[in-house]
Image 1: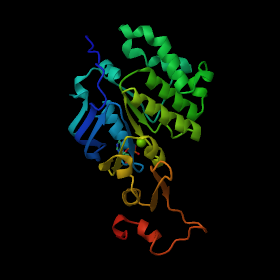
Image 2 (image 1 turned 180 degrees about the vertical axis):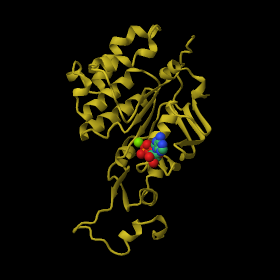
Image 3 (image 1 turned 30 degrees about the vertical axis):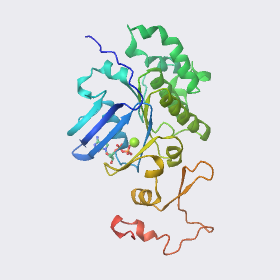
Length: 292
Ligand code: ADP
Ligand code: MG
């Protein structure tokens, strides 16, 4: 079958979108009317509590999920219009569970990212692209190791390198920093910024709100399958919204030099005693019981 090769989109162009997206899994409504645009040249951080629907939204953008109603678009066409290879040329995903059942080496797994381009002119680049992706993800030292022998953080970086090697303009990363130390977390976010600077779109699910504040162009907050807010980090990452969405008191200050929001959960310790006005455990029990 003929493959339609992707054209490179200009920065600012919508590369993927969901419109009034409803997804139901196992009879349960998981996404409830989500509308979101993903633009070339931007890092979009997807944040929200466990179970909010972040991975489901990423899978929908990936074309891996049946949609109940609404649309999921890739390069302005419904995902269902693209063949598997055409999708793989346009979006690369690093999903939460990377399971590899055969004893592939790290380098072999990264090389798999090149599969969509077999038989095209881009094949000539395979070796260079794989090498660069491995360097960027800092996995060269264990390139010959078997994937299953790696630590969780190392596996995450291999999955990231495979996604990078795919050279699609849209990168979908589901909690790529979850198992990483501080240094490698910053590396991954810098990598996301680098890709965005080169014109790629990066959607990245993060739990660390400070990483989102420091690196994202746009932040989308999901809560109970709905979009609670989206926009620039400083507009979205407010104490009020985060306290509401996470059901935990959150404090936000501007960073003294950059002005970016610095976000901390409020902690009950000897140095930070609660007062009835500031913090009430009973207020956390149910949403309705929260003070105004
Ligand atoms: P997040 O990534 O934000 O933590 P997910 O998108 O993985 O959340 O899941 C959202 C909700 O959907 C969770 O409550 C999860 O248990 C539920 N869910 C996910 N997959 C299924 C499924 N196949 N059947 C039923 N519920 C599911
Ligand atoms: Mg998830």
